[in-house]
Length: 358
Ligand code: MRU
Image 1 (cartoon, protein in one colour):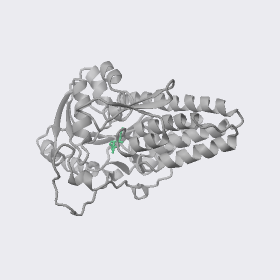
Image 2 (cartoon, protein in one colour):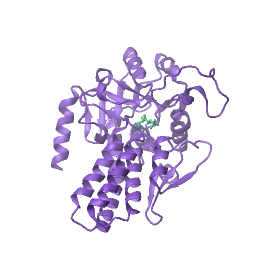
Image 3 (cartoon, helix red, strand yellow):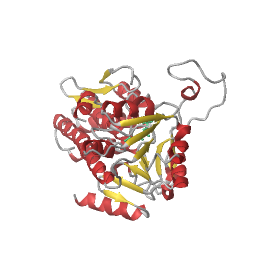
């Protein structure tokens, strides 16, 4: 795992160069291209075009990005500096709407700025650096804990189906949905993983298959419409997915196609687990109806990246990037604080109470 973690870093901060360095995930698996982002437009574009993607990685990029951009602000008075901060915050927030980690990270950076408002601007910037690095480190620690809890739900030799990419490339180190896979790999669990290719942007084929192979995990790639086949054959004992936003009742937004998998898993009697940090739970969201679902361009459906156009010109296209899985189809939600089962509200409220005391 060590090699995977050091060879492929989705996001890092180059303090000396004052830039966010990302691995351009639109170039994978063909090429490993690192991009250096030092303007707000470059950060926005990288998030919007999925050069960096996955809910936690987007949050970390936004935190690093707002630090980098605010460091270049010339303002000396707090009010001027804060005005610049708010402008960048609003701009970043407009890059992608569904993953709550983006706004959660920006809100945390804002609390840091406001908490330190009495300090000279140069010292506020230093505090922002510490906060951004803390967001990344806490994320990595959370992923490991999520993996430990999730592994307790699994048995050696199981077949695991996953969707999209909620692994190392989407977060830091262990990832969320793939954390128990990596921990299991270290402990000889010999899981057999099935990765949905995840149309339209193929995060499963391009990223999950890539990173799991890199780590030597037994991985089989399937098209999205084959999930029912492998379930029916008895090859899958658990479905494990990540999440972009969890409502207080447990309804969960994740990459489009996730809710269909949950319906199939219920049909075949297979447990369906959602894995993610508590920062993905949105206290302001009572249920899935309140989650804004990103809609993306039609060309993602009509044109393949590596081939000719596959649909008639001007065909009407519907391309929601995420969907909401209702809480009643979710067996358990696993976070760094533990394993929640329905009714989710009660456990989430308790976790938030504990968080406030920490
Ligand atoms: O559009 P993407 O690639 O950002 O979608 C990513 C997902 O849906 C992931 O499952 C989710 O963000 C969790 S990542 C740990």
